[in-house]
Image (cartoon, rainbow, N blue to C red):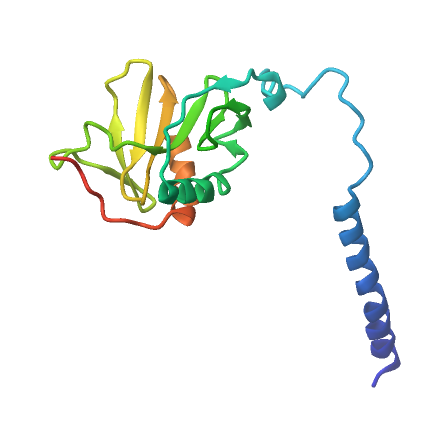
Length: 187
């Protein structure tokens, strides 16, 4: 074997484990503490980003859940993103852990809601990335999207003026956490 090649293999064999150990150590112990920002987060295009700690805690109602719904909702809640369509998650106070919120005005997800009153055999659903949604636009202050093809109904309440980007972003974690179930509209 060529002496240069042998030296390269030897250097790689020694260096690679050291680099891996350093990466693991930095990830486990963390790097140095970042210096606190003197004036908060930097503005982008003249807009200062909202920090989760700056948002007030939301007081939200949550439906009571049976054991199966509670298990499904727990799985879903553990799969939700910390940021949704560019908005940070925010603190929520509720009797149960089946509600989540992002941004201001808040986009609110509630797992385990009742079948939407308007979800009947005559109603159509919108399918996004394999998840079927019933959309209720009767409230002038919000559009309510409800996933109707999962073991539990999952509601996403969008404030007026917010497009469907948050719903589209939630289809992947929702589909990963909750298996498809044939929709069962009301009469």
